[in-house]
Length: 221
Image 1 (cartoon, one colour):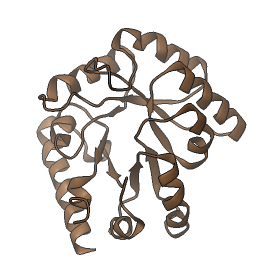
Image 2 (spheres, one colour):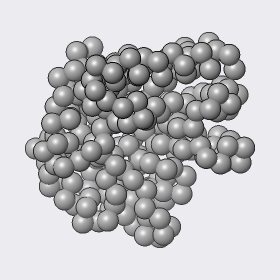
Image 3 (tube, rainbow, N blue to C red):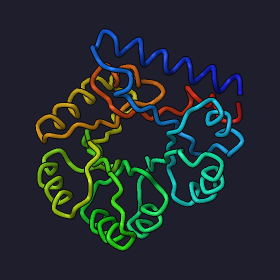
C-alpha cells in the first residue's frame, strides 16, 4: 500500500511539475494506471490509495479481474488500451469505459453494431500509425480525415487520437505531430505517453497518459 501510494504521489507530482510551465491544469491530464499483467492484489493498493482509472490490454484478462474489483470500487474506470479484435467488440463495449485503439473500418463496424445492440455509446480514441510502421496498428496519417468522418457517421463518440511512437527514437516530434493532427481535425483528446516519456507527452498536450511501470514497479517487484 505504501509503495503504491508513494509511486502514485510521485507520478502526480511530476505531472503537476510539467503542467506549470506548460500552462496546463493538472486536472486536464488523466492518469491511466496500466494494470495489464498485474493481478488484483497489485491493483487493489492503488485503488485504496484513491486512484480510479486503469488500463488493460486484453479483453479476457480484464473480464477475469475487473467485475470483482468493481463490486468493491464501483466508480473505477477501465480503459482498453491494447489492440482489439473485431470479434471481441461486444465484450469490449460491455466491459470498458473507453477504448483506445479504434484503427480500421472493420473494427468501427463491429463496435458501432455492438454499441447499438448494448444501447450504450463507449468513447473511442482513434489510433494513428504516427511512425508509419508496418508492424503497428493505427490509421495511416493520410487516411485519418476520411476515417474520422466514418467514425462520426457511425455515431461512435470520438474521445481523441492515440499513438505509440516508434521505439528508441525521441518521441517529442511524434507527440507534436499527433497534437497537430488533433487540432487540424477539431479533436481535443490526446492519448499519448507511457512510463518512460509521459512528461514529454504532458508538455506537448497529452490529455491521457498510460503509465504502468512507474506506478506498479517492475513486474514481480
